[in-house]
Length: 393
Image 1 (cartoon, rainbow, N blue to C red):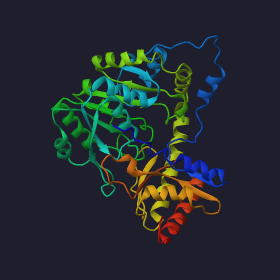
Image 2: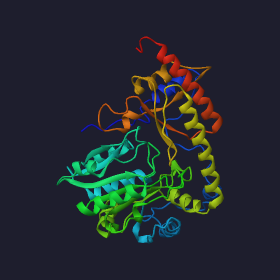
Image 3: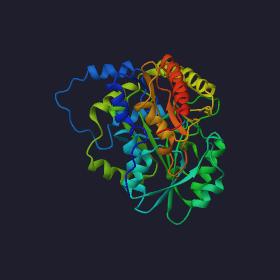
Image 4: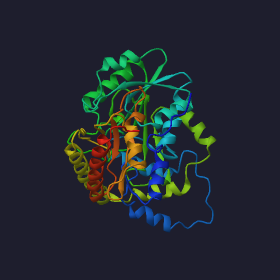
């Protein structure tokens, strides 16, 4: 099967060409936070005093894993250091979870739209993704349990969720999480839960971790990463957490085969745990304001609709265009307004079912408010110009 292209990065050559022409590009396409990495993390880099940069243990440094136990405890996620395996980013955690729990031909049920790289990791593991579709009209809430049950057969091994969700920003409710728990229990499935955006929840509703669900402790594999919460995408530190000793043993075989998670990254990630409440609060408050700026601005553009995302820092918006992928490419190749344009991720790449998301884009509110406000002006002008063309050529 063909490995899918990243919908987030596939327009990158057009963006590079636009910049070559001197056009300023507002990057709304990728979840790369622009907020500063914690000072404690940067200080740790400057104070590395080693004569040798050795392999770390395959499961990661124990000191870091013990500090993580305290971090998770603040969210009522009760784990031990032995339940935690440090990985090279959240991506490796997903891949190792798939490779350890699934055999070729096994099926995973995933709500769509979904983070596009899940598909790539499933292909790498020989697994098959089956999707239940969520819709922008329903605010991307989960469909009824029956929709999941229709897909369950003898090859079904797991359900995968991302909560809060990338790309939609949706936060699963307690009822939805309990329904997933009941399915997992009834059919003895694994529950892979990607929870890298837990810091970013903008509602009074509680964050329900898969690790909070009673009766399926041995079925849950939690995926996490420091990339988003500390603006540390480049250090490639994530982790895989599970109470299931058999799964951990299988994961460790892959960890040993790749030898060691990043040494410098772990030093930085451990230091980041000293960033404290003030850092987290400032980052959170900034995203709350950016979310309001982007969502209000989108819904003021004629024909554009975005639900209000309750978590993460993304939204999926519907645009008044015939083909969002063509429009996104056109914005970079043919359009500029006062020397500026916008880069977005066509949402079709986040759906597995063909034909879905054709008039939708994913937008990340990872730019400062002034830039978001300007990007919205440029987007409005782009839509006017695009729809005025008789032929979108």
